[in-house]
Image (cartoon, rainbow, N blue to C red; front, side):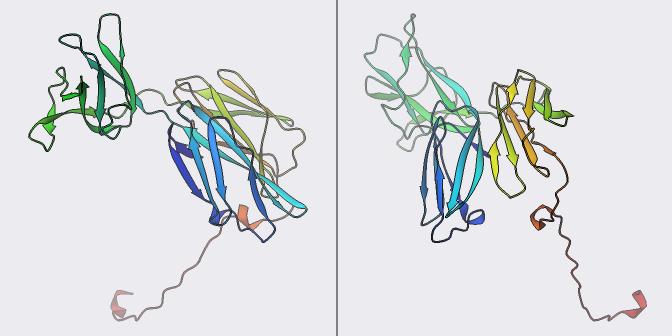
Length: 284
């Protein structure tokens, strides 16, 4: 699972997972709210996340090599940053008001506020935790926020307003899921803690090393996964996200023992010997 933010771009280097031959080709049909491109020479997969993206997004792909074909799935968890509302109360009736700062490259045009019925200018901006310098641009004049007493020098003899965005409180019950029942033909997952299930990623990890998406019946508190046609030794991997986009823990369930041994599924132990000169025999 890859954690991303809306309007972000992530580049995945597939050298570790994909060793192409001369005839092999990597293909993907894309997914909603994603713009995807793949460089066959550098084996880099670039994913641009749309501003409206939210929750879990599965990106299926396929590797074709002659008559052989394998499927795979990349799961993205889109976490929306916290939203801060910039508010400007004008003393008179300015013609234009915008806000610029370190969060938008000090652009005059990138973040235009709207005027409410009382003449107050407001704009909501998603911001990650951290400190941000900013000013309002009122009729093309840069001015500090009159409602924010926290300032810092702007390097030109004046001041910038300073905004500090704190991380979300971690208190309360964390959104999680657990395997409640594994029947011969279906897996039943339930949610626990705060929040309701809003999006899911349900993937079958097949014995041949490929993965593919599985259909599931989803309610606000339950994920019902049928798997009657899956081969033995398949693993089912389930992730959920709540309304805020917070991803749950990962639940993995095995559907049976593998008939053939695959070292990729095994735990490997290494015995490392160390030879030394026993200088103080008295301490033996």
